[in-house]
Length: 305
Image 1 (cartoon, rainbow, N blue to C red):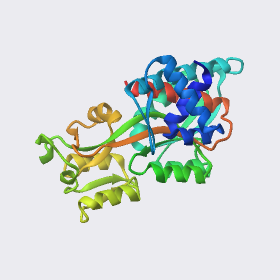
Image 2: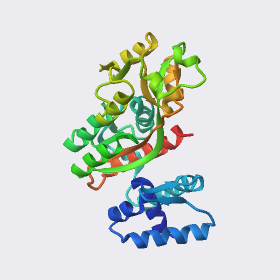
Image 3: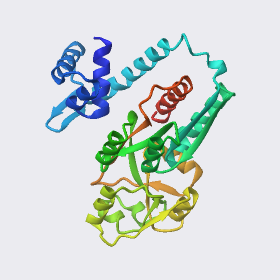
């Protein structure tokens, strides 16, 4: 068992295939595949299931990833001991995030960083994932937190590559339809995608990608989709109408604490999984940016518990 095996495994988890991970690491794919087989033999269980389009991780593999991330974080901290004087971090970092993660993940990060580094200024900017990606590409934010949904992940990855950006996954989340607690569908034992799409859909900004719109149109070409540019107005619309919106499952507790009367629906025939991660321009991170990323990783672990 060695650190190279850990690095390969994390890359496979991030990119979804051994071939893609090898390309990103500039390593021969057979070498990565062989290293993974050796690791699985040493551990005594399978970490992933290999198939034509990539890999899927087993339950043990998912658990191993979390442990290895923690090991990597500790190694990274160890390497930085010579130049990390945590008491005198100064300067400014601008973060871009989606509304849901600005109100939970990044707000907690901001509060913790202010307490740890009072001389450090952190500025938060808000937008949907497409807007945040553009902010990072244009240099208007230093780091961005975005969501890559399984419906439209290929679109984002193409834009990330085109703009020569780097995406690092933090955790896997799920987008759920959210409605008011007394919504007609909230009392049904089973709800299907075609059922929820018979009602209006409210979106924050331009959060829906073309692929998601195409998917919705398959079930209801006449569906009413309303764009709202204020997050609080969006939630009030959900509370006082039969419409729905999508929110990350990790935000469920935060959302229901702030807006009593909302409920997360379980859709029987639809799962909208998404990768949550941070985005940067590929240049070497500054000392301040590294501290922010470390805090981001720590807060992500807390959010997913």
